[in-house]
Length: 399
Ligand SMILES: Cc1cc2nc3c(=O)[nH]c(=O)nc-3n(C[C@H](O)[C@H](O)[C@H](O)COP(=O)(O)O)c2cc1C
Image (cartoon, rainbow, N blue to C red; front, side):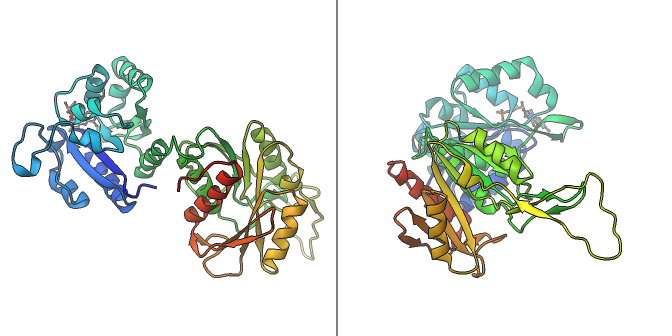
């Protein structure tokens, strides 16, 4: 979604400047055009060459410089920016922006732009917690600036606390979310489930499955990036938690059902990408089952069928992971569970199914007509599913 977007990256004089180079690199890799403005004090930490090499663009450091390379109108970047990102943002630059000052190229650009501005502060905890910085941050939020909360952790200046520069992927997540806030799913609330549920046998053992959660997380992020309010109900996964999404963690199918029932009220769609266990242990042992000679039998009983049982006025999208008779089995599920759409995949196919970064799926709506998609990244599959969700909502998809 960053392809072709012009991102003006403001870099200010904090110790985390070197991390902004990684951010610039990731934005370029995601297809964005990046124009960097560095403050005079940022130049004390790194030279513009790093950013020039990464972005293949000259770096603006001086509003008054008149050589050909830098001859640029003082508000030119404010006009071409799809978004302005200040990372790292010093306490100083936040104070200046909160005051409306425009005494260098970065603050002038921010004052002149109509585009959204994302600010990623990084500073020593004492500076971040100073009442003046608190006031300035509150003022910026009130004026519509989007603040990425600094992380809590070890600080370059010593000590431990809030003020650390957030991970690159967190800042990129905020940029995508802000860029997508007026997109086709704006104003919609979508519930997504992800991961494989874990059904306990005893306090240490579980029955689970090979679901990685990647498809559900890709759907949640794609819906967020298209402006939706997203609730992600996730079984345990190894994935990092996406920003800008309400996340509810569950373990069992029964817990997932309760959370889904709570979440779907006032939602427009439920997308069940989770691999919910079909069976749970009938009697969970309260103490660890001792290893003994001979066989051990477990009595299993059905878990609730969340998709079939949850009712309400929202679109129901299910997944069918099949290893045979893909289309006919998926059609049966559409009918039996009264689904608006099913995403069927043959887990025996290469590049498809559990754990993979790609997927090859067939989409089947209530008309039973299969739409076969080629092998795609799970994020691309997510966007194609959301295109269908938009049409089901009578919204023209923007992708
Ligand atoms: C080694 C060093 C590290 C600094 N790190 C930070 C920092 O992480 N965050 C911050 O707000 N200020 C930091 N400062 C102070 C800023 O550089 C100073 O406030 C400066 O005026 C910021 O200018 P600018 O906002 O125009 O870039 C640091 C200063 C030095 C000398």
